[in-house]
Image (cartoon, one colour):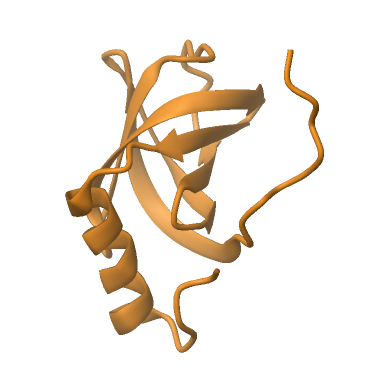
Amino acid sequence: MKNHIGRALKRDKTRLRAKIDCMGQKTHGAVLDLSQHGICLHLAIDIPVGRGDKITVETEEMGLLIGTVRWIRRPRVGAELVLTSNNRAKVESYYRFFKDSPLPA
């Protein structure tokens, strides 16, 4: 079991409307915060979500992101983004075009 020390990367608060799909179960929701490696989501409808499940999030600002569920505190879900160059480019593009600040470290 891992020791939980705290969040390693700063997350930036957002409020982006999103379409969320977890293992074929879909709902609308929102991206509450975002970092290079993770995302916090608010689910509008309580769909089945489990730790380790693949989750996709689609927003107008970033397009489709893919991640893995790491924690659940209904109605919020935290996911680790799959570290692909495509996911990273979408997050960086969001910061470049929609936020006044650079990507958080």
